[in-house]
Figure 1 (tube, rainbow, N blue to C red):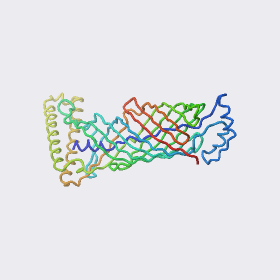
Figure 2 (figure 1 turned 60 degrees about the vertical axis):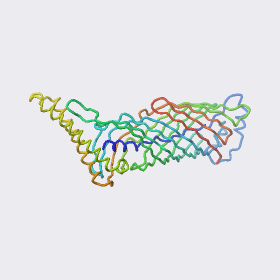
Figure 3 (figure 1 turned 90 degrees about the vertical axis):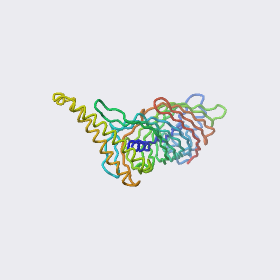
Figure 4 (figure 1 turned 30 degrees about the vertical axis):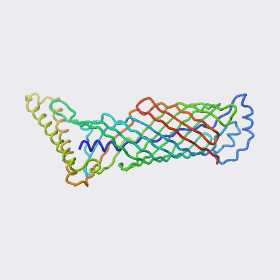
Length: 374
């Protein structure tokens, strides 16, 4: 049963595919740029987007092309905290196993590709959509703990790794401001990742503030290098529920062996608790500390026995049993630091890269973007 709990937990974590904000409308300033400012003020702006584009251009702002399509590759590793595990069989009651099953660590690794169309709706607001496919693995270490006559002790340890595919969709907003080549970007997006083992798509929210500088080539005004630094915050929905086929995790004959071993461990520890209690004097048995310890140990062992009783349905079900679970999870560190750069070949083609590090998460994004006017 414990291995089933362990493997079920492996299947619920997907780190959101992120995207990064692009270079924004820039207010051209300085005496050396007087000619550029004058040309912007007098130039025609025949395009539909962004709204107020003509007025902003006439005030001396240089605007990027209003629409774009990018393809990006992402690889990411992140440590996850898991708790509040509950498990049931064949849609029976869920048993709280938070004390019995304890997670030592969980790490997700994601590799994926996303496609992102985007539009400058206003000169300082970019909106975009995200469509992604990813391959994700989750490695988890956990232990099974039971009380005995002295304390809680680990009776089994498990480590495993689960792999699964996910389809992600979402949308994002990027408010920006730029003056003299310097800019501030507040990128944020919401995504939903569809995974077969989950009852509903996994939700994630990403917030990425950045500050940077755009450096234009003197002899090639359409070429530039942009550099930025900032933060990356990931929030995923903490509650996760799902259902799995028991036969997908272990053959029926192996389930019987695991259940028998579980009954033996519970019986041994119950005997130790009973012997400890029987060895106390009448006065010691009335001590509130001993009473609380005795009741807690009996309750935990009874819960473990109930779970094993329910798990026995897996064997009697001849491979048709299902396992339901719920748990809470969150990134170990919601924030990490990011640095990035973009090389603009011309106003239509750009190559980008961004790296995130510090804390318990690291990620790399590389992408190619094509821009055009609407």
